[in-house]
Length: 300
Image 1 (tube, rainbow, N blue to C red):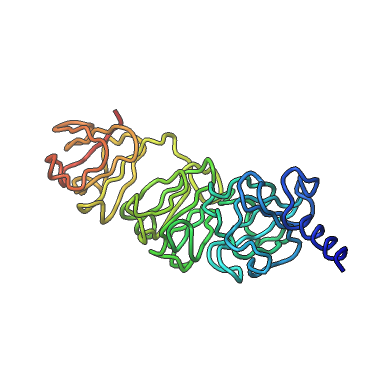
Image 2 (image 1 turned 90 degrees about the horizontal axis):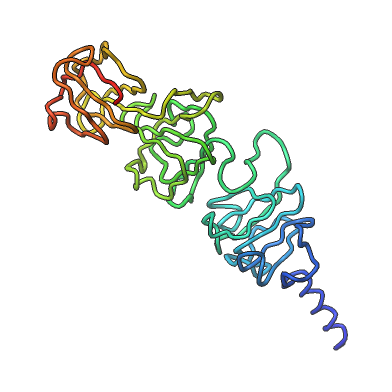
């Protein structure tokens, strides 16, 4: 009997508590190997099946790094029963602290390697953005990969509290449908949209540096947005190049937001009359004597 317990103890150590130096799944292997320390160290567990509650293997809220088997995709979730914030993982992740999942995973399940409804592998989107109902990428999530004029269609209007952005992409998020109202460009993940004044305010969004997929190309990132009301509200006009005349937006602007660059606004067409150079945001153009007076605008 004593010999039997020794054999069982050795087997358990090989599958649950193998040190990094052991020759077990060091390149991933079949299944998902999870570790309770970063850099694939500490106690580990080899998972080959769906587990709705990691309490059953003693790894609930204990995982700090992981390795997925070659070509395999696994979904990891912060709550039992595959609830809360979830992400698809593939390959190696040496430090879950960089993704906001350190010591937060409570359930895991294997996903198929293809098909149109599957989430993109890796933490965060490989294309487009993820909007989350909670801060720190928690709660219900919606994936957006193309320009969206009204988030009502996605059931997510004025609900987003955090966002993840695909690497190298620039997205414009706006407080009204059809890209109206105040808009902000985001180029990286934001744990709390209140930091940019857009918490629970986003109604439309579009990619700024896309050449397909519903986005559009701009010749320059320099941009200014004119608004028909004070405090960046009302009808808006986004401008990326100099305009000798603002057409039906002449003498309309009451506030403006310089997203990038330096701009000069003038109270006559062809950059004549009284002109003012502006940078940043001007909530009320009365403060610079240009309320309902701008007729032309140019980059400086």
